[in-house]
Structures are given as structure tokens and as C-alpha cells.
Length: 298
Image 1: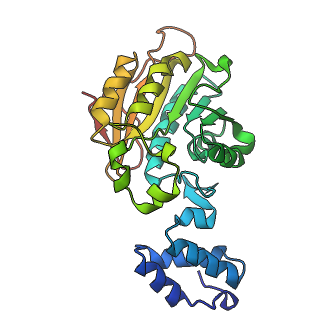
Image 2: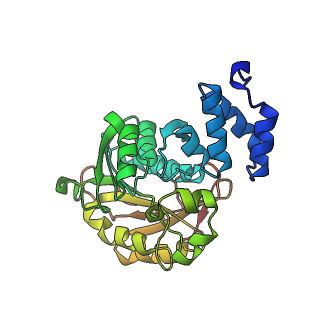
Image 3: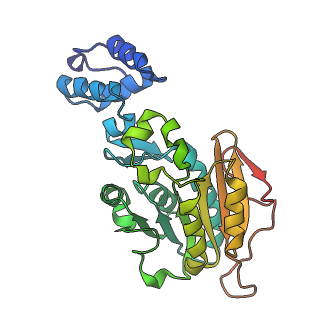
């Protein structure tokens, strides 16, 4: 993409050099994005200053690309990771299978941040009731912009603000919970450690504190045959699977080498023979996504 000369008191080479000097690996691509977003030379200079100071590119631009969509991301709001698109792949496959018998999916997005996951899933399905929650007021404001007419966003802790009428009705429960162990927060890149909310990163001593709370209550909210999906690290997956199984859900693990992603799925057992309900797929028959390979749940 060529840049307008009127926006270049800072030349392309000067911006690229400055971004490289502060460790931006994709300095050329970032330069073009900044130039495209800036409306005036002064705005471009300010954006370059903010990026060079360490602000995440998505916060500088005001948006992130996620699952083929442009998602608004305000300063201080968790930036959706591209690897999490694998979770949406998995959720889309599972929800599509359920809609063979359920014409409209009920989707809940816990710890929704910008609302990227729920919005992407409902868009991929072309239908669905979406309910999202986050404890951070800034995230809730941002998510409401991204979700818009697709659903409702509530401020509160996990399930607490959800309508009680959703209990036992949720087909797909997305939970992009924080899973970085507290002692490892300081090892994160400054973009995350300094500019993203700690509540979106810190998962407690072993990184699984919030996850355990989510899995403990999930059976109350899931419909029979419904699915809980969350991202974790490969190292944490065995403990996450134990938490899922301990609460009566059928665990499975899917991972993508290409996207460096590990997703745990917990399925509420279906009522066999009941109308509109399906039994979980047997182990080994996992829905496929980009770069998929199955991993035994132990």
C-alpha cells in the first residue's frame, strides 16, 4: 500500500528504522498500518511515538484483526490473540453439529474482553443468541461496541451477571480465562505486562484459579450435549483436563502446531434418546480446525 506524500514528514524509512530500534519485528508492516490509519501528519507522528514507547500496535490503531473481522480494542483492554482463532474454529465445528437439531445456538462468552470470540463465533454461524460477561468496565464498554446487535454484554464476575433463564440452556460456553501463573507475569513482554489489565492475565499460583471456578459451575449452565471451551498452555492441559472431568464434563484436548494453540473442550453428557440432543463424540473424533492434531486427554 503506497503512502500519501502529505502524511510523510516522517519518511517510511525513518518510521521503520525507529520501530526496529525498539524491537518491532514486523516494522515494515506496522509502518504501513500506521500510515494507513493516520489522518494527518501530526496524528501519524503521535501514533509512531506511542508505538515506539511500547503501546501495543492494536491499542495505537484502535482495532485488531481477529477471525477475518476488525475488532475495536480500546487502550487498557486485552488484545485478542491470533492463536485464539483456533478456539473459535473448534467452537464453530461443535456449534454447527448441535444446530442439526437446535436451530438457534445459545452462546456465552465469559471473560470476554473486547468481545472478539463471541462476536466471531456468532458471525461464523450466521445465527445465535450471544451473552458475554467481563469484570472489567473498560472491557465491557469495548465489547458492547463489537457485539452490538449480535447480543448482550454484562459487567460482573463470570456467571454472576448472566440471566438465570440461561441455566441449562447454553450450547457453547467460551471462556478465555487468564491462565498465566502469577510468578510468570513479570516474564511477559512489556506490551502485555504494562498495557493490558492484570485481571486478564493473572491466573493465580498455577494459572488455573479462574478456570477451576468456570468448570465448577459450567454443568449448571450448559445444556445437555453442550460444550465448554477454553484455551490453556500445553503444560497446563493435564491439570485443566482433571478440573473438567472432576466436575462431570467429558474432557478432550485439541491443539494446533501451526497456531501454537491448545484448547480444552468439556462436554456435558447428553440425555440419550432425548429430542434435540446428541451424545458427545467419542475420543479421537475431534472437530478439525486449521493445523489441527488431536491430543489424548489422558
